[in-house]
Image (cartoon, rainbow, N blue to C red; front, side, top):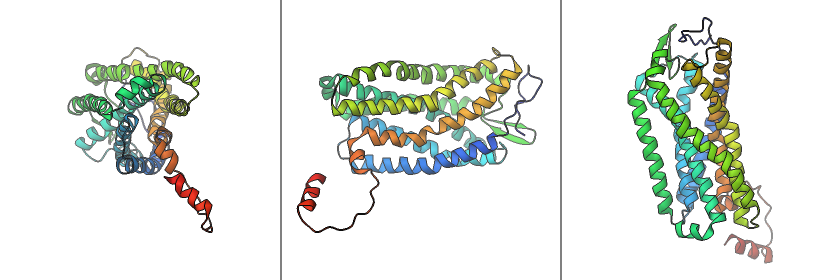
Length: 323
């Protein structure tokens, strides 16, 4: 039985035994199909696309973040299959735990960059043509990675990691009240406000307005931008928003703003579910990659083998279309 015993004001134990099935099943599906989609996308964007647009630069960064996240999932799968008992040591716990949660905020940042890029391309095409040089996108990506890397390093070296309770070793959970008060609350508040809530407000509030404006422009670029925005909105609503709403409640509970034990038990169970949901963004992102580039729409399709036909006008026209 999984318990959460570090609360000083709740006499009962918080349980969520379903997580021992939910997490391994979800993570295995996300890892297998997510790796196929992301590694395939990385190959196409790096080796097949000759001209790198600003969107492709952001997408490559998003693919790298997703791939790094997927590579640490085997550790999390083993952890949950072992009844939340960590056996890989302190360094691996700090590294995998930090990368697991940092992927969330890096993904949100680059999705926001993709939305801004599509908005400029559609609504302000002249400005976009002046900024189309990928150097600007590279500079923005370097800033995002630098800021994210600095926060990751600071968290790796200063955050608590493992706890030994009831014969098990917990990794990045079951923190004590003092650890939340002195260390985790400031980190959590900063990442929640600046890493999630502000970008989510931009995506959920501003981009429906942007979509309405773009819908008035009857061009292929506009319709493509609309698809990208709708996909990002869907990923945000399904994966990111539930997790951060529950995480806000979780933060209020851990800082003793919420003191009701029955509510705390519900928050704990909901947090297990939303942690599984948020991992699925790495599974859905390849859909975004497909619609974000004309190369993928032209070439990344599954085709059944066709019977050979006699050479003629059809074969010539087909070759001309490929060009």
